[in-house]
Image (cartoon, rainbow, N blue to C red; front, side, top):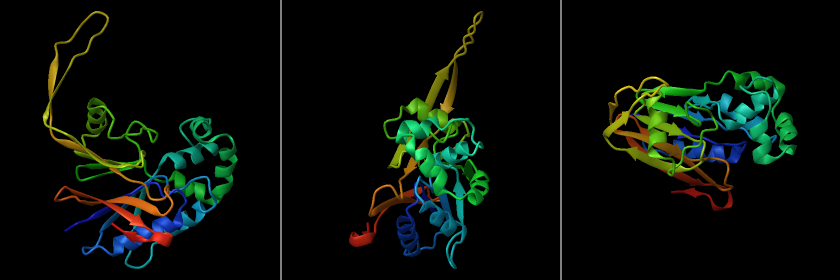
Amino acid sequence: MTIWAILSGIEGNLAAYEAVLADIKRQRQPVEELYILGDIIAATPASANVIQRIRSPRDHEPEPQVCRGWWEEQLLILHGLGRTGEPTELIEHYGAEQVKALWDAIPRSTVNWIQSLDFGFFELDCLLIHGSTVSVSDELTPNTPPIQMLDRLMRMDANYLFCGRSGLTFQYEIQQGSVTSSVTTLDHTAPPQATLVKPRQVIGVGNVGRVPGQATYTLYHPYANQVEFRTVQYGSGKGFR
């Protein structure tokens, strides 16, 4: 049976990433695909070690497939390679002092590799992305309105959207139904049209490195459509559940 491991938010925490890799190796059935949905770095020098570890998987480890996250986008903005010219979000979230900290944390030789990362992945009927197709900053949570969730799914015609921006683990189901919409211009109103909505899901995959001593990630069985959330304890209270 095919199994995917999907994680996000290592945020420069190498110990947490190693704990997740160890938990992946403990699975009774081997994990065939490893997806990392962004935020592998943060404004910490330890981020360079995480990048090196991801780029150098060991024997019998799946090759990580990595897409950009919010932190990667902020780094590219600092180097004039992002979609905007100023690190406005970085300053708003963490203060101006973190601009220099992020700049100093990641060697210039690594920036080109980060720039080469995909924005997301589309595999089978699954979209795997940090935020959503709108942006890496788009934070989907269990409280996001259904119509917004549906919009994010239908933009790529995905049945399952895996995201990591919120850092939460959740499974958000949209039941079968229909959506009625119409287009109104200055001189014309089109007749309402009904669009059939099939069952779809948005899955929050958790966060690996943000909470010290505890990493969360997701296992997914794509051909059985089964989702399993994993919590790994590491450090002094190590273990898993």
